[in-house]
Amino acid sequence: MTAWQPEEPPIVSARQRAAEVGVGAVDPPTGAVLRLLAAMSGGKAVIELGTGAGVSSLWLISGLQPNGILTSVDSESEHQRMAKASIAEAGIPSGRARLIGGRALDVLPRLSDAAYDLVFCDAARSENLDYLDAALRLLRPGGLVVFASALAGGRVAEPSVRDTDTVALRELAKAVRDEPRLVTAAVPVGAGLLVACLAG
Image 1 (cartoon, rainbow, N blue to C red):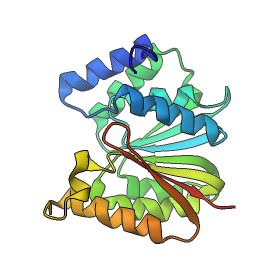
Image 2: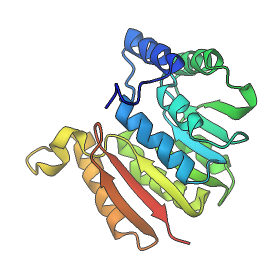
Image 3: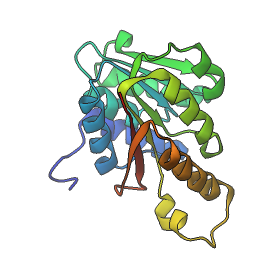
């Protein structure tokens, strides 16, 4: 799959930055799905929670319209520094990637209602339910909310696994499934994506 759809050199460089400091990054097939979802969403305004070294940022931007803007939030200044380097190396104008330092739950209330096409959540798993609540406010009708690592390597399906992150992912899956405004699907790519569309 990777050979059929290889990563562009700037994404490879961003992945190397992530590996050097031990920061997680989406794998290439997951990145390709994120690019597809960004394009399908309309690709004008996208939020990313958890910038990392900019791997998923670059995949998301590649799915945006030429004037589309990514707003990416991360509480770690080192992650922001690496992501800025990755975005600059890709030749992306600074106005198309708005990097905000801070806790997602402190930043999200400052963003506009019903103004975004996609919200990608790859930050603290324990806060996913709060991210979901925020996404329901931030998304326009037809917009998408996407959660990373939703299958946790198969652990979510194992009732005996009770670590904090896995329990949080189970609770998220139930909340998404039970939310009548959402049309949902689990996408078994990489560590899994939970994708939900806000019905119009």
